[in-house]
Amino acid sequence: MSNVARVQVGIIGAGPAGLLLGRLLGLAGIRFVILERQTRAHVETRIRAGVLEPGSVALLDAAGVSARLHREGLIHEGFEIARGEQRLRINLRALTGKTVMVYGQTDITRDLNAQHEGAGSQILYECEAVTPLELTGHAARLRCRWQGQTHEFICDYLAGCDGYHGVARASVPMGLMHHLERTHPVSWLGVLADPRSPQNSSTPATHVALRCVPCVRPRAAATICRCQPRLRWTSGQTSASGRNYAGGYRRVLRRRWSRGRPSRK
Image (cartoon, rainbow, N blue to C red; front, side, top):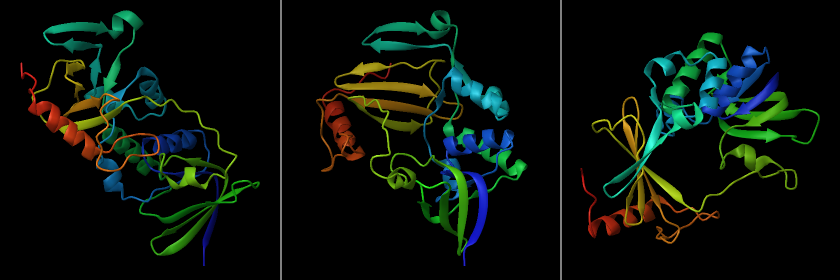
């Protein structure tokens, strides 16, 4: 037997997008439920982006979840572009009057979860068989298996916040989806490390066919390498959009760095 409940908004995915949407809805007095297939521990520890632009910081301020961000985050006033021994400083504050904030996505997720926990929000982790139904009717249905029981939510609106490969996008009927996308002709490989912190900015550096960006974070640093479009070594598989997989990037790094490792200066 299914447990049936009525909510105004059903949200699929408890990443930063889904949690922040839920927080804003809750502040507006709108009833919602969030379904997530992973564990809470997994969601709070997976490494993702770490730089917030001013609009994102303002939105977190409005949601009342930015106290630790302002206390522990790192403000970057600009960045440098380095090539060989030359450096060009781009001062964001001087040019735009704004800065960016370095604060990991994992920390945002933890802050949002803490607020939801205090507010008693309905977030179901470790959901199985999450299925959106009746998307073209007057009220959509959201069904899942949770803790051994089937749950069904009747929703006025459904929000798919589970990413490109999530179940929400795959459930939209053909002909009803409109794509708004800008695809860049490069892909990125991030390497998380715990070195001595670089200076308070990001410095893209050129080496052969790689672009490397050391990006400091409050407790770690991420070096992000970009491969040029002409380098198309993959591990035998390429996605439909042309994105390369990590195996290809490892070969790029080994091959290029073996010809001349960059200076550690």
